[in-house]
Image (cartoon, rainbow, N blue to C red):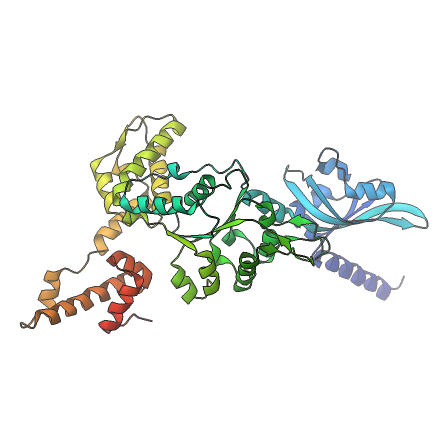
Length: 472
């Protein structure tokens, strides 16, 4: 063989290996004995394995398969038949479950079977996502009795939520992260006439964009490569309740499709040509002021009006000061049972800090702080300030050092040179104080209004009236 011919063969071999490793599908080839002879990079990623774990080894000695389900590659070798769009679940050498959609075919040379090849598309994440996010009948643990609190603010929301259980109207629950929006959603479901039907919860922010639509609406076989007949969450929640958490995370295009579903009460699977009627109550959660979400193009106005037939505003923990110690004791009791401890309560320094802290993480943050504190207690029955997590103590210390509101005395010292009409001076101080509050809250209108005890509309009225610059 000439040198140039040898170099050309090297080039062809390199090109072949490069293309095999660059294609975006898994490739696995075995010879007639079941030994792996080709195993590309994408397949290694799908199965989370190294070449040395698979190459030149018998496939059945490396992978484990479910009972009554064998290897599609081995089946192609035995039957000498091609199969397409077959879903297969099996386990790698670490015991991790892998799910793929396969096209498998025998390799026949001169009429004799010499091996089998498989082209695989990974659907492992999709399978796990569907399983992890579906809460079916019997998994709704919470009722209105599960909501801890005696404050007027929380009692009012519970009362409004209880009234909403009498009808099938859509519900929009508004509240910051950690306020307990899902507790209210489950409470509404369990107190309604749908309580014996499915309750399915889906966090919209947890879904990759390319999977959202198929998970919500389902797919028809052949709609795209690897697509199978699969009902979406709307069909799975038939007769029951579908909770869409963080609805403002959905793309505008998908929000438009969701609006159509709400109006027409039908869905169409991806790749299908017919509509399917649905009877599902939609409860949607949003973690920001809907007006802000609309203004910033995170929520369609028409979808807001459709979803917000009943709108519940869950107050943040900082507005439920009367409930803080009750919730803290509830979590102490919970972790006493879990950790086999006998913690009685909080010392005065902890009580003071809890009642004066802003609680940006709300009830969830309070629970995490109690759990963290009890994890480091040994033989003690009172939670002390030194038991609290360092990150909480640092935030509390920073708040005490920096978050001091301007006093009337400071204003007089700086701005009062002579006596002027009272109304003029009151307006001047109002402007001074609102400007300070806006600056402290990074000019966030809704957040500043809440802290000032005003509605968003009222604060905007003051801003316009007093000619206040908002920094935007």
